[in-house]
Length: 443
Image (tube, rainbow, N blue to C red):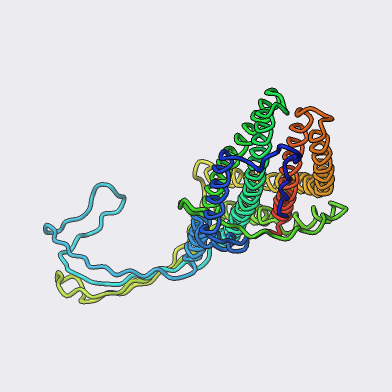
């Protein structure tokens, strides 16, 4: 922000350089300068790095991504054998057999035994492979969600950063406006005391000063609010004041939005996450379809029986293979497959909807950035004309050729032009950051 020149008050015979009432303004300005000097110095890059390191939403998404990676290991576990050890002790009545609750009637022997059982899936004709692919794709989608969250945090930091810069610039304008109007009010009061100006002029000057003081109070509140907003965007709950370094103005936006839309559809993490999710649901549908296929597994067991009845050997060992063929289960498997297919179709439509919304958002962000860029030159011209008009109004009022209404209106126009210029600069930087976010360049 360029330093704002303080316009001198009207001069002429009988005009004083101020009064005791100007002192609170100077004291306030000194306090503001001292507060700025003690505030934490911060650049935009430092603010972004702090947010990426400490923001809880990013930490949350990273933890979710790690959890999704563990699901991949879970889905691949059937590829490996299952081994477990057993210690079994039993005592039964003589010639006891299990007679109820089952079709067979196994004999129960007195024994104490230890052993190991090993089972291994031989094949389920692609179901485990499809499930592991689905879990892997979902984990990749979760990684893209981490990138999306990083971009969301960064764009909030950028907005808060430039909003604070704007609030600080408006505060400087408000402080200068109060000081300038205080001088004018004191001078008009002195002239009125000498019967060179009317009491109506004094009233207008004091009203003008009161409006400037209201602007100053609001500007001070806006700076405090913007400080809190920036702290929250950086993932901190501390109450801090920041002395921000201004950033160079970005280059003008591209003349055509079509390349930006193409880049966004290629680079936006939301699109990548939706693609991975759609593919994951499709692979899960394949896995649900494989439920109707048989599965083959092998199992082996061996161990020792140190305490046993005489009919048992002192050790045992056995191996076998099992083939499971689903025949009928109340249409459970066909229903699960159909459900998964419909969910896959819904995910494909969700991907198309995300692409359409991103295309729209990029176009809107591009239009906003272009409009903000055009406002830069217009606000510069507005400030130049408002400054010229104030100079003429001061001269006319000093010479008695106009009323104080014309002077106060010119002062108001100058203040509004200064605020508009500051707002336009930081609004363009904000809109450019949003455009970078919408095209996937902010991450």
